[in-house]
Image (cartoon, rainbow, N blue to C red; front, side, top):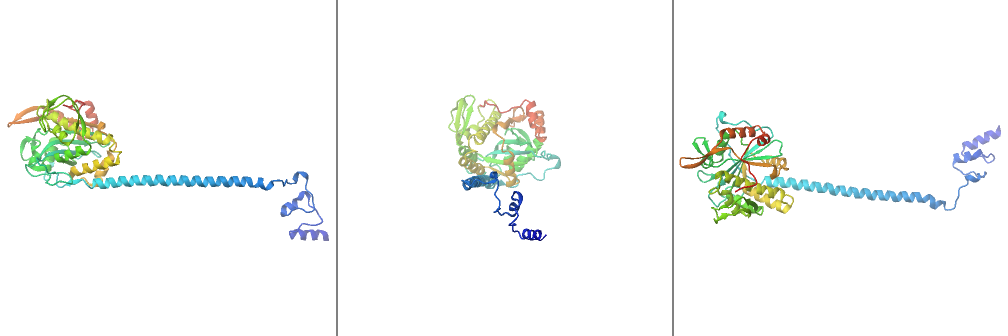
Length: 409
């Protein structure tokens, strides 16, 4: 019993018993101390030859793999940072461009009519859609009247005439644009003046009277106004490097240097383009052919700006945007934010997504010794209803219209 007690004491102290050898080296394994009194079986004896190198090899390999993983993470993190930085720079540049260019557009105050009887007011535009009145002004002056460089008032009685008037309808889906030209010689009722040519409204009462006249004529609400004069027209044409326009057949060139416009393609600078769009005498369709020329020019400019490398070339884009914003004036209701939203909403529209047409015409006449255009009341009423209801896509697909084709005189 004494020996048992001594052995238990030794075991409790963590010291192996010197006399007794545990079976199978269990005690040594448990204590972590090698058994000095017992000889392990042959199969249990470790081979000490090269054991240090082999034991270290897996650790070295794992260390190498850890270093590779760390380098890979650093590269990926660096690439991600560069990508995010690039995205932020692009977004920042885009935001700056939006702020910069929309803030440069000249605003015209007080363009909308006031004191119009409720019965003469058109219904509001369908939600999400907008209609602009685009006006080209012939000021008979070398001084610019529109844009940031304007040196003369946008309008004063009798000093300017609106030679180009287009309703530009932008549908709620932002997938297309519809441009309807109103012939300047359209015989219409001008509020407070009686029957007269449409372009007389601008001469007599400026933008408010013109907008009032067009709204009463069409029952379409004009949401915004954009105006450019002929001085700005020339500058804009030159800013995009001129335009390429094909004349369908040889016709007399009565403006500028005179002579003829020969059938075939022409590269036109600002002066040539201005002569081209102002011509109406000698054209088979008179004023209607003139409006198609104006549409043809607008289509050519848009085709060049939107798909000719200008958008993707920062230098060309900056130059074009500088020029556009310097020659066009808009109403003061079109805020910078609204203009930015408009540009963003219409970002995917190209010239091929735009439909150009003339308002339906019943014929021509001479009234009070003036050559006038008589609008087709029935056809026009259907067109204006489609604009009001934002159903122009269906209307164009189901009606015969005087649309702009590929052959223009």
